[in-house]
Length: 357
Image (cartoon, rainbow, N blue to C red; front, side, top):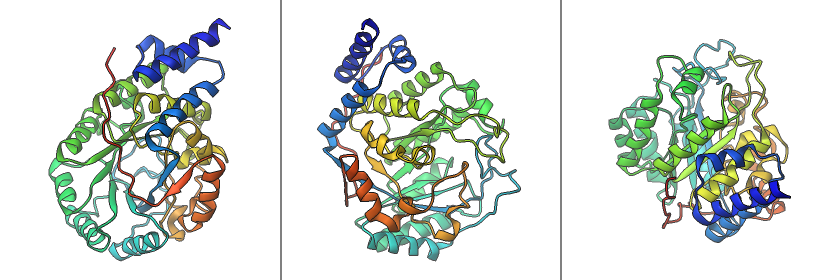
């Protein structure tokens, strides 16, 4: 009883203040008690801010070429087993046409860091989408770029950018990435994006190799400093063609716990219930929504390439994950107690920064 009361006290404090000390966060993350009260508290907050609305984003995975060699990623440049593809401007616009017809009002262009897509090409694609769909949000998720490139995309019509920091700990970052990549640059990119005026999304993997609870707390502290509009987390899922092929997947339970903690720390954030959650558990996305998430991102990519954008093993890419099966997705969301809305879904204004402890 004493242990349960202690956890309830931590949940109440987090819900009321939006913050905990490092020791308190560690206790909450390591707790072996049931998370139902944590989920309930997070759901209460998300309903106060966003009601029962769930926003949909049309995901267009337009290239699986990548110059980077991140040790956890299935499209890393040294994976010779990957079947590579690129979508051209017309392919992408066709995805948008189909998405708009299906009711999508946010398009997310995601890809590896592919040098083929110069700033000129990206700007041409973005400006074309903006001209055709002025009522839509355009999100880019194409990695680390110079600040001038980010500004060019913004001026062309992009208004959101997703760049997960993956881990806020230097040592841990070095265990997941080659020496050619740096956490310092990744963080600077995020601050540059904010400075330009993007709505910025960041986030991290849960259960990645070598990750500790202290690393997770550092992730939360970094997000407090960054104050992103969107926060995307998902369980680490292994891929057979990476150096981490033998490592275990991340935990569904820990991912859900962190979604709830993030909702309580960042009441106004847009938090997706990710494809990775749906991959690791058939009810994963519904559970993510019940834990405090309020965004889903079904796939608008051409069917022929969906399986090729293989960041991790067994990624769901058909059925309800396909944007064309929006009716199926709506029913699943409704079964969790929420409803999909056709709206851009801007982050709610008025977010108060949590006090640092």
